[in-house]
Length: 508
Image (cartoon, rainbow, N blue to C red; front, side, top):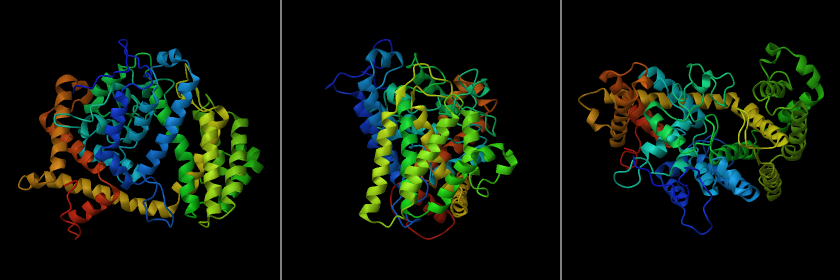
């Protein structure tokens, strides 16, 4: 696929900041992403829970993306203003519009029902269709931008510059292949590269049909280490962490899910008994909700084990005490009643903390393997980890949420299985949704190309029957991943014979 030139790049391939007032190819990329159907779809894709499941307004993937974009721009502009252009150029280049484009794109690959949908699609892709690299949201984002979305006749993908395509590569490797040796085999593994239950990397950014595209993009960043993100990508990744750590807490405080007594009990117990908890055996902490303080102790151990490049005991203690004082005792202690005073207290906390976190960002020329070239200060990094803990411990582990998610998982499995059965029906397959047929054809062509050019990536699955099975599987997964929550539920209902909207245009 021909790619639009990177006008902000010099002949050495390194991105340079554009001069003020020039026509930016990056601005064109940003608007192509914002005007794409994949971007609009995010308004009806779950962030944590769907609209209507709580009494308050909750973030969806689009509102989350908009806020990540604002934080990413603030971080990028701060770095650009504080850093010598030569230093930025030596690190691969940074442009605040590219960072915004990365932030706008970062969740395009999320399927219906958020991370739950990601897990289910990964399983059915591997077990039903023999797709070794399964499903991964970051890899799907790259595929959406470079293959599945279209911009004008004859284009595959949105035809973006290398800088913008590279800005979504948070984990620049495949699940099993490239680069060699693969990061999952390294003695010191990058974040996300450790082997999971499949034997491949837990996080990765390109499926087999898209690996060649990713390799081409990474060649445009010769000064960036194999294990590192581009600067624009690092800004996006950090902005996502900052936004996630704060805005989801807003949702669940407003909805009444975060109960002061439970959260404060956890924080007070760990602060008071941390020495005793530190001596407790792992099996004693296996059910962290049973022992007050055990959840924070599990977090402390996990951070010290995985992130010793930045973890510090005193910084962790300070983070627990500060979050406990300013958020738990300062915000949660006052029940949310919908008043302007309650909103003022919550928004004041959020805006002050975002400003503080953005101000702590700095560049690292040669970061550790699990670190990043764009990072928070040590104190700020610990505070973000503790904020994320509150959401994970007191929201994501709730049994009532798990009950709803099991139903959503069933919806996705039903749709995938029904489409596979439909396409197996030689008498009726041609009446399947047109976009589904297009996606299957596109995926099949992709696997045929890999079989010709890089057959080693297919691990022996190169027969015509193998290619057709994988093409069908990847096409069905692409189709289902592109549905909204409502579309997935409505499609499952219609495929079961249920009544509902029939003539509505859109995906079929």
